[in-house]
Amino acid sequence: MILCSPARTAIMQSDLDLFGRQPQRLATHTVLLPGFVLPRLEALLDALRPVLRAAPFRHMETPGGQAIAVALSNCGDLGWVSDRQGYRYTTHDPLSGAPWPALPALLAQLAHEAAAAAGFDGFHADTCLINHYLPGTRLSLHQDRNERDFSHPIVSISLGLPAVFLLGGQQRGDATQKVPLGHGDVLVWGGDDRLRFHGVQPIKPGEHPRMGSRRINLTLRRAT
Ligand code: MD3
Ligand code: FE
Image (cartoon, rainbow, N blue to C red):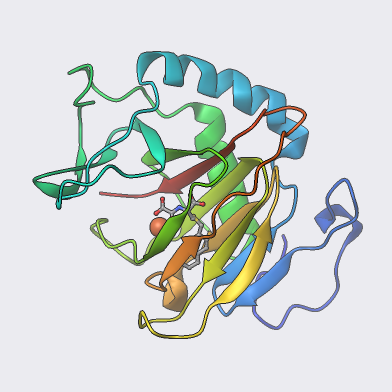
């Protein structure tokens, strides 16, 4: 197991990713697992394809009526949506009227393993928000507060173009640390860090050899 307690001791060879990068603790309950999904990347993409065919990326509106720059989709028992009514989780895709596609077993498995590697045992995700960023797209500083129980951690998988993630504090005005997130990296956070403000700086133009000119982020949560 990786990084079970904040005071970790030895780093094992098996903790390192393909390029020898080590897990990094960014805050008491926030852990970066570089390249964690790379060994299962193709299986992950195979699992996403039918999900995105059934529930394609789309732009949602904020309650104030502005288009959200990040396009999104969901899978799992619930999906996160935004419209004039507000932010919430729904059982059905408002675009198709059908239930959100099921959470692929591989995604649930990766989330469970990543959470355990970061010291959160027994994590069972029931929803995955899939965010799509084109170059220039940013995500402004916010908190994730639409889930029922903040004691569950969140697992985030980054794919494609690199991003600079902004990790803030408990108040909007707190200083932020900049965290580079690359293709295959996984971030896990929970505990005291669950309600930290966070955001993503505008994605720089570029072309990722496997993913093209985009960044995809999968956030796995327990919403119920
Ligand atoms: C929060 N997505 O969909 S997840 C979101 O990359 C969202 O698409 C971003 O924020 C994205 O709500 C970021 C990554 C993340 C990582 C570590 C955190 C969010 C965090 C640590 C504390 C609080
Ligand atoms: Fe968020």
